[in-house]
Each structure stands twice: as structure tokens, then as C-alpha cells.
Length: 299
Image (cartoon, rainbow, N blue to C red; front, side, top):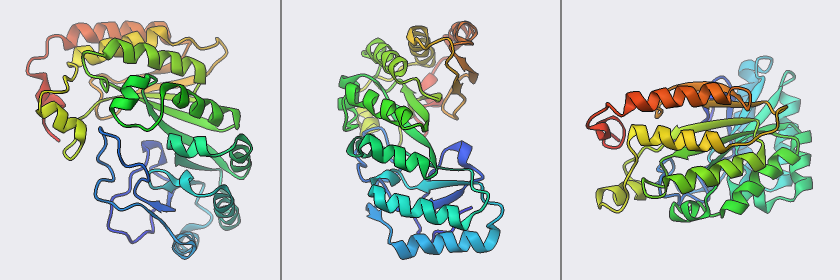
């Protein structure tokens, strides 16, 4: 459900397909990651109270009883002040009597700018789930892709979300460090995940999009992407070194359109099975020839 009249694209996680998408910002305040072209050409804008209330009113008139989930868009809604977010959450609770949760993307700089007690206030007001594209736990990789945080800071972001009582859907990108630095990225990311204990963990494969600096680097020969088998080897190394307490219930998924093999399970319980499935997939993927047509050359 979407009631914004802007002519720029709206992105949301697959699990928010049936949510009321409430746009509170337009674009992305950072908008400088070298692998991403989602909001290139979209000037960042914080929507006015009037524009936000108009969307809520339209959703309320159409289906107030049916709205159970709300997703705050665009790329980093938490750039808004805590007071303003709390007001929006209050209005949402008043407008939709069966509201179960509010979710949002979480840009790392926005989380770091908020104090722990602010995050707890937002959780108590209904912001229950944050989607955090950590991408890597490796400082050198994060610097190379201009993420804007170090590996240590990326871990702190995830830990702050968990400590606030929110659910955390954490995403990492296989292949983002290139072939040369694959193992370093995998090991550092495994350590970061082990320190964060996310609620959900998703692993997607790097896709080189038109308009992104990373695709330009690839075309200039400055970035060497991994083969499909290499991507799965990186995932194997990453999962092998993730250490979570036995009583953890981390939902793991690797079923994005970019993935060569769909994987699903819970960590740490299903780790042996997942590793065996990955090992078998590596054997199969080594047979793929001209693999770049499957991933890196069609966007």
C-alpha cells in the first residue's frame, strides 16, 4: 500500500510486500556507496509533516482496520530526529488500531547519531524491526565502497539495535571485496555477525549496476569480481566462522534474485547442513562457463 505521489522509485524489503509504505524521506542522505544506484539522481529530501500526514490519512480512509505493518521509506528514515519519529509513531498507533509493527531501513550513520535511550524510546513506541545493510565487517572493504563507517562502527550499529530490543535484519554482500580480498571480507564479516547476534541474516551476491562506481571500476579493470563458485566459497568461509550461542535463533536466508543457490535455515542449528549444501553447490558451479553473463554484464 503506497500513497506518495513522487515520481521517484520506492524500495522496500521483500518481507514488507503487504505493508503500508509511508514515505518520510525521499532518497538517501548518504547516497555515496560505490555499489549502489538505488537513489542516484534523487535529491535527498525530508518530507514535510503535511506530506506525511496526507499519506497516513489516505491509508486510514482506505483500510484503517487492515493495516498491521508500516514500513518507513526511503533509504534512511532514521535520519529524522527522534522526537519527530516518535510523533509519527504515535500518529500511526492512533490511526491504525491493529498495527503490529513499524519497520525501516537503518543507515549506520543514523544509528550512531542516536543515543541508546533514543533507540529504546523508538522501540517502545512501535519501531520493532530495522533492516541494516552492513555489507561487510571489514574496515578496508567498507572504506573501498565508501560506506561511511569502519568495521568496528558497523558492529556497534548492530549491537545498539539489538540492545534497544529491536529485531535486526542484517544483510551482507558476497563478492563486494572482489576476488583479491574475498577471504579477508569473509572472515571479518563472520566476526562481526558473531558479535552482533542478529535476528535475521541475509546474504546476497554482488550485482554491478549501471551508474554505480563499482561497475565503472570493473569495466576499467580495477575490480575483479568473484565467479559463482568463488561467491559460494566466500559464503562457506563466512558461515564456517560464524559463532553464535547455542540458544540463538538467527534466521538465515540466501534467496535473493542475485543468489545462484537458494539457502534457508536457522543459525547455529542448521550450520552443518548449510555448509554441506554450499559445498555441493561449489562443485556444481565450477562447471559454469562464461559466468559473467549471469550476473555482472546485464544491468
